Length: 256
Image (cartoon, rainbow, N blue to C red; front, side, top):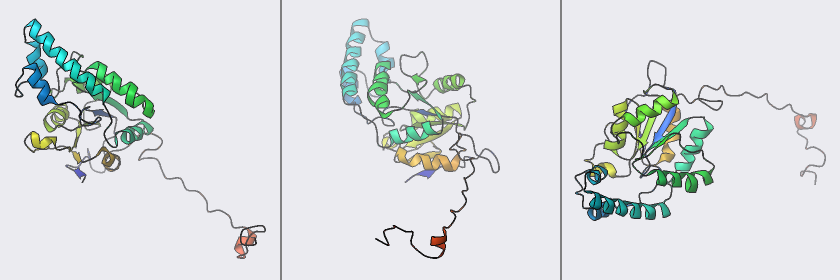
């Protein structure tokens, strides 16, 4: 079930305006399809270490071998990549309301481009802007630098009006909290691998399909279809003389 962790209002009777949403990729947008245990083992790196940092410190020949393993496994991952349930629906909902979207992942730029061309464009969705991958010269999550860079590019302030969505309490929720933005945890079960805590995420959901309702309830949604648009009132249709008399119009099915 969906759960709201804390009141999102920034003051009495007010809610933050949802300015932008930042997504994690594996386990959030896409179904996990890489066996990282096998990848670490084939690269000769203990699971307790950061894989990419460990490879960067290897001698040249060993580093090239490990990088080839990663590329081989990631190529297979691209071939079988598919979206998680509810992803396209949430993305369309955000698009209709004019909410900016970005991506922060440790996947390669090549994998991000495959996501855009093979899964995102066919669904009629615009590319994430920006889409930050491991080739970008920014510290990895949970360091807040990538969120700071996104806020600068969007020309918005870091704060509760931005939302970070991911499936890792430490890397995604911790990332959002380090930058001071709102956070949503997709509870795929990964948190139990990381100790069980949800890191105090503002929202915990089992599926992204649950988020639009929670966002509508806890944020001001911008745009012509947003939360501040008054409901349109239409006058009741005028009754025809025949309808007023309780008579069926000539040629209706009642007279047939």
